[in-house]
Image (tube, rainbow, N blue to C red; front, side):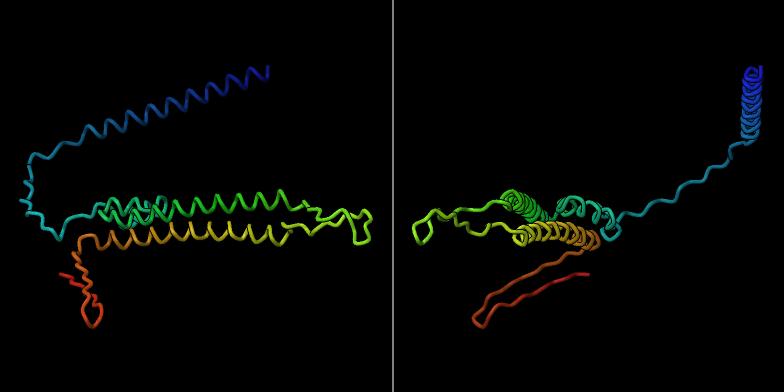
Length: 197
């Protein structure tokens, strides 16, 4: 009986809660109907022609940083810097290939760390004696190979951060026309930059 009474009390409480919620919704709609729309119209001011200085960049600097930090070169490509995007992607591919190569070296060193090579079965007196050379892949050698993997992972992370920073700067300066020149003369090379504000 106690269980049945508890079940009935729970159902009653749910019904009361649903009734209060329904009453609150009806009251809210009633108040919303009392509002009337304004009868006067406000005309919008004529818009001035958009000048080149007020154009929005294709990506915000924050979004450009995030895009290129996740996939190096993606924001540079959106901003029209295709050569920079290609360089970032080439560095990314090279880093991933070298991480795989270094990881294969670590696996090989670990697999062969317990191996030894027999160099001779005969001693100087002509008797049978097994002479083993020290193992090629000892523990320090494995640690060196592991540090190579860590170095390439650090290089990959640095590429992501550098690509993000480059995209951030490019998004901030996307509409600044810059002309760089390198001229080679008889007295040496000259670098010139022309910036218009």
